[in-house]
Length: 277
Image 1 (tube, rainbow, N blue to C red):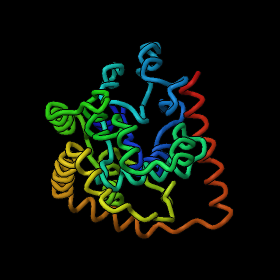
Image 2 (image 1 turned 120 degrees about the vertical axis):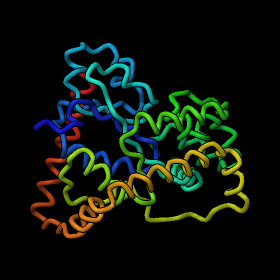
Image 3 (image 1 turned 180 degrees about the vertical axis):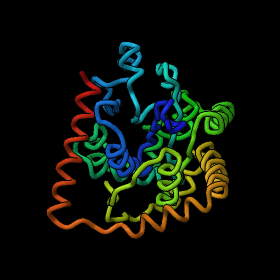
């Protein structure tokens, strides 16, 4: 029997700094790596434009399209598609992104942010396109600092009509189980990826400033939490069963862990190569 979701491709709309790296590693164990199209974060090779230009036969074979992408790529998939995403409380997401840039020498903004000691206020001024980013990505409207109420309404409409699961970063395990039960995944033992072990001090007044510049994301986050809660209510028994199973997974030994890590790295590399050629 074909699972209903097998008839469509899965699009993971990965909002930056929302536990997407951890979820991506799990996705790579669920599907043939050659059927995953991974967007290049630097927009060099594997881009939405390239996806659109692939032959229809190749696009039809895709099972997953993922990356930091704007809503709308489903239009390029002749087999149809459904979306998933993870939302995060906007202030926490802002600080996670801001401190990630400070720690990441290869990030295009790292040198400027660190050498000029750019604080939150100047960072917001320099990056209007990064404010209300969750709303912009889900609405499918590129944001140059001009998000408005209409953008928010489109984002809400898209979440309702096109997303099979709207997860919440702060409730990752429940979100993962919802996704797994929806798409019939077998979730392996996993560890959180790219989680900062340090929490720098927050500048006085910075939280209110971030909230002021991300009001639409704040409203979208609350809307998404309500959708998430509704999904949990509908699948309460299945989610509780899935959480119990998740908590009984044993951490693999050193040899098995090494093998899994090596195989995982290979699967990841295969998806990147398959997406670029």
